[in-house]
Image (cartoon, rainbow, N blue to C red; front, side, top):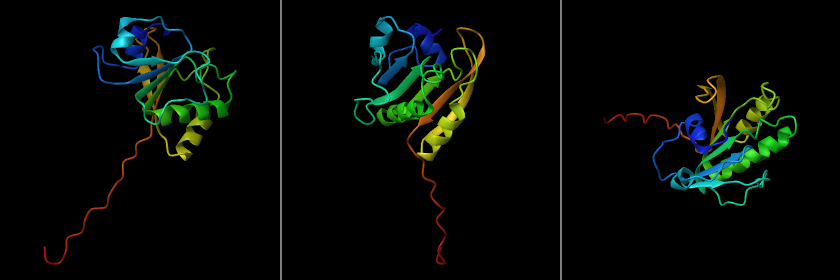
Amino acid sequence: MLNSWEKMEKIFALPETSTELKILVCSGKMLPPSKALAQHGVTLLSPPYGLPELEYKKQTFHLALCSQFLFWYSDLLSETFHVQSLMAFCRVATEVQVYPLIDRFGKPSLHLGNVLQRLQEQGIGAEIKSIVDPVEGSDNALLRLWTETCTVKPKKEKTATS
């Protein structure tokens, strides 16, 4: 279980040294205060988290991490709640990561497919990364979302005088 910042650092592959990243963390497991949290500029959401709305300004954070909450409680939280919450995270952070993608009973979240489709329809980039949980040693997956788009420009044609 991700019940410490050190375990979260490993799962989300965060740098162990202090960085300039501003990180927003939503965790279904209460994280005890630690110096590492302060060094990383981490803002912890407290229950009930303010979801599916967040009171932060657009792009306040570089990274939003959600652990053992969304998808974890699929039996208690609706598909619409998941979509609205992830859209809120995408509004306040450049990148969003969610782990794990299974529910609290160890089954794949029943919302995952529809949530991904609805986010992509809103222009949210998404990828699922297979990871080995360094804490539990088991295979699982992490969802990465982003809002910045990359525009592909056509190659300029050479003019007749070139």
